[in-house]
Image (cartoon, rainbow, N blue to C red; front, side, top):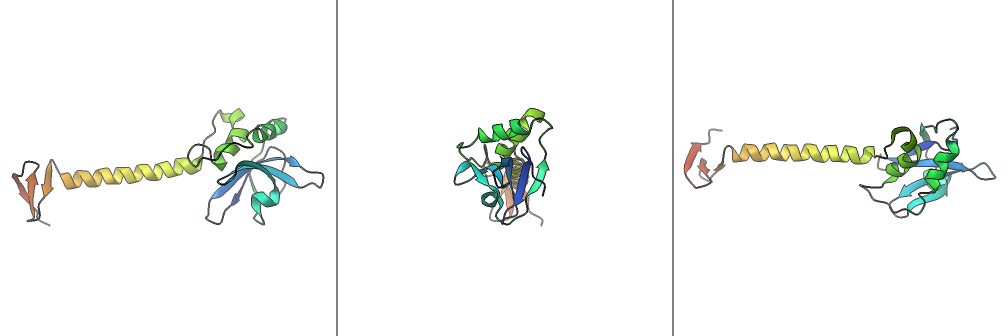
Length: 158
């Protein structure tokens, strides 16, 4: 690992998710320090061991040349901000510091993936309800379709 100031990096957590942070620099002993957002503490500034433990740190994005200190300063400016799983998680924080200058966006793939799954679930539920309702009729206990006013609709054949 050749971690440098301003690098957006991640570690794999025990539950198989990526936990993101930004390298703010190094102490006198050469130990890297990272800014990262935690559920229980919000945005914190910790040494590598507190960020990753014994896990490998992976570099996802290098800071643009000449902007390393700016990315680190942006990350450090987030320290103390509260965690929100949907609006400001670890990926949001890292992206706010590392990506904002390049893309103008501070978004989270974690949230986008979750929203896509929720959208797929909502679509499946909508289709299921449409099939059950089938043109304003509902299945009665006797196996016959009845309209919302109770009139006979059709016989179930399956």
